[in-house]
Image 1 (cartoon, one colour):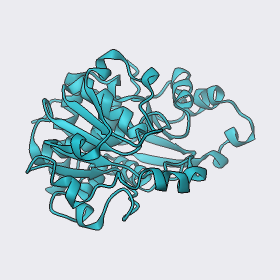
Image 2: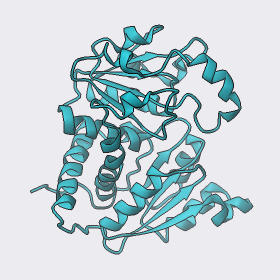
Image 3: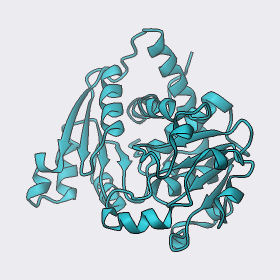
Image 4: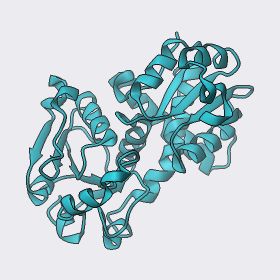
Length: 306
């Protein structure tokens, strides 16, 4: 059966837990120097309409480690730049490759592509969601702190695509999300169904939001596409910085994450991102391992892990 991964909840809870377990096995196998090539002869096409470091490198390297090959395409490399429709691009490309990853602006673009594709489609980031990032983040938490069920994750700053993906994950995996953002940057209630709303609590004060949290996470104050608001956002968010004083309000064994790239001295200080509570570098690496599990799942299905 053709499956896509366009939002975090496109996989069930049991399937998501399988992906975590499979990512651990795949990562361990790589560390032991044992080859694992279930995607020999398969091709991943990657379409980038937004710049990328971690998404490109993690998918390209991961697919190679699984035995497959990769085509990396910017919008200008294909006929979409000259007016070919998303629908027609999907119809053609999915006859020639086995899986497609798209990093773009509108969620509607990946939804339209998937609706006309014969191959699985993965959302590598849109303005609305970033499911691969949160998949890797939660896997990283599991590695270091165990199950996330019943825990509290606090999001400090702009409620962006990663934040809304955390809400989907909270509803699926049964944990809570605290949000603290400045006035004028509220949650879009129209984007939050009841199941996710019940997992969310908002706070005007970031210190109140952080109290007792198991995981503190944030992102840049100005996401891609909002650069014209940079100075306005810098002023608005100046008190929503993750620093040592804020981390001190979290649980004693709390960890810090950031999806990167980070603007050091803005949303996070050096002492936090480089400090002992930071899992940022493991988190970045785990994009590759989690996505390898996802690629294998979409193309092969569930595999019994020894």
